[in-house]
Amino acid sequence: YLDTRKPKNFPPGPRWLPLLGSALTVFKTRKKTGDLPRMANELSKKYGPVLGLKIGIDKSVVVCGLHAIREFLLSDDLDGRPMGLFFEMRTFGLRQGLIMTDQSFWHEQRRFIVRHLREFGFGRRNMSAMIEDEAQLMVEHFKKNITQKNGYGVVQMDNVGGIHILNTLWTMLAGVRYSPEDKEVNKLQSNLNELFKNADMVGALFSQFPILRFIAPDFSGYNLYMNSHKPLWKFITEEVEHHKKTFVPNQPRDLIDVYLQMLNEKDKPHTFSKDQLLCVCIDLFMAGSETTTKSFGFGFTYLLLNPEVQKKAQAEIDVVVGRERLPTLHDRPKMPYMEGIVYESIRMFIGRGLGIPHRALKDTTLCGYTIPKDTMVIPNFYGILQGNEFGWDDPDKFRPERFIENDKIIPLPDNFIPFGLGKRRCMGETLAKANLFLFISALLQNFTFSIPAGCDPPSLDGNPGITPGPKPFKAQFRLRD
Ligand code: HEM
Image (cartoon, rainbow, N blue to C red; front, top):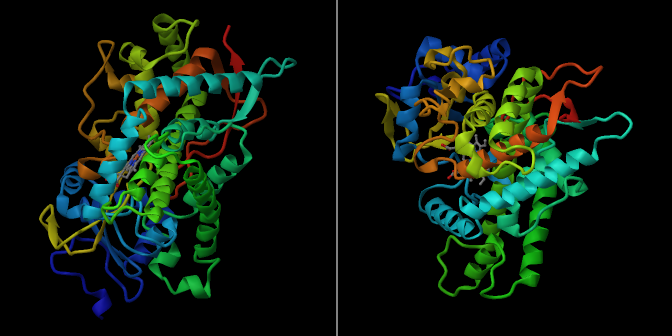
C-alpha cells in the first residue's frame, strides 16, 4: 500500500502499482510509441509537461515542455546527479568523474578540467588548427578507400567519424591520436555503441531491481553492462600508467600530466585522486566521441537521402572556400548553409532522446509541483526539438534553411537547447560544433555521397538507447568533378 502512495503534490502521472510503480504503463506506452522520449511525450499530453513516474524503486520525473525544461535546467536545487548502481558502475563502481557527480566535488573537478583543457587548446584558436589537421587526415583516409577500378569507395558511414572525432579531444587530454584503422579503439567504440543501444537513460533493468544482477545477470543487462566497460577501463588505466612512467615534473604535455602534477602536490584538495583521474578520462572518452559521432551519423543519414542538400552545401563551399584548401573555422560565418547542416544534424540526434538525468538535491518545486529530495528528473528533448508545437515546420525534415534568413544564421530559437542550460550545460559544445562543421564540410568539398547500389536507403528510425544512434548504413562516395 505504501508503495502505491505518491508524495503530496507530486507531478501527475499514471497510477503506481506495488513493486512495479508505473512501469506497466510506461512499458505499454513505450511499445505503442516506439521509444522512451515519445512515450513521455504521449503521456505528457494527458498528464501535463511535468510527468511523475515511478519505475521499480526509483521515483522519477520526466520534463517535456519548453517552459518546464527551462525552469528545471536553470534550478540549482535540481543540479544533482542520480545515485545508484547503474550510474556508478560505469566508473569502477565509484561515484566519481564529471558526468555523474555533483555538488562541491563536481564543481571543483569540472572547473579544474575545463580550465586546464583550455591550456591545450580546448575552445581556443589552436583547437581549430588541430581539427583542420584531423579533417585533412579524414579526407586522405577516404581517398585511400576509392578503388581505381570503380572510381568510388564504400564506407560504413554511421561510425566512420568515430576515431577522428575522438582524436580532437584526445590530443588535448592524452597527447595521442589514433589511426582510423586502430583495432583496439575501433573495438572500444563499437562495444560502447552496443552498450548505449541496449540500455537507456533511466537505467537498465538491474538498476531498477538490483537483486536481478545476482539472479538474472544476463536477462537484467548486468553482464553486458560490465563486459562492455572492462576493455575501456583497461585502455584508460594503461594510458594513465604510461603517462606516469614518462612524466617529467613541470613540463605537462597534456591534461593527464597536469592532473598527475596536481596529484603530486602535498596540499591538494581531497577531490583529487588517481581514481578520479581515471573516471574523468572515462567520462570524456564517452561524452567526447559518442555524441558528436552520432550527430555526424545522423547528418549523413539525411545527406544521403537528400542529395539536393549536398549540392547546395557544395555550391556554398565552392564560393567561400574553393577547392585549393580545406574549410577552416574562419569560413564559418560566411557559410550559413553548412552551419544549418550542423544544427540539423545535432537536432536530429539529441531531439530523438532524453537528456542526462538530474537529481533533486533537496525538497523543492518545479512548475508548482513538489519534487522530493533525491527524485530523478530527466529532460525530454524530443518534444522541443522534433515536435511541431515549438515552431518547427516539418520537424521530421532535414532543412538547413530553417536556421537561415537573408543569407545569415538566425538567432537560435529559445527551444534549440541541444546542449542543455544552466550550470550542468555541456562543456563540449564548442568542440562538438567545430568538429561537425569542419569534418562534414571537408568531406562535402571533396566527395559526393550516395546510397550504394543494392543497399537499402538509410533508415530514419534510429536506435533508441542511452543516447539515440543512427541505424548502421553504408555510403558510396566519389571524388567531385
Ligand atoms: C553534438 C554533440 C553533443 C551534444 C548534443 C551534447 C549534449 C549534452 C547534454 C544535453 C548534456 C547534459 C546537460 C545536463 O545534464 O543538463 C551534456 C553534458 C556533458 N557533455 Fe556534452 N554534448 C555533446 C558533445 C560533447 C563533447 C564533444 C564533449 C567533450 C568534452 C562533451 C562533454 C560533456 C560533459 C563532460 C558533460 C557533463 C557535464 C556535467 O555534468 O557537468 N559533450 N552534453
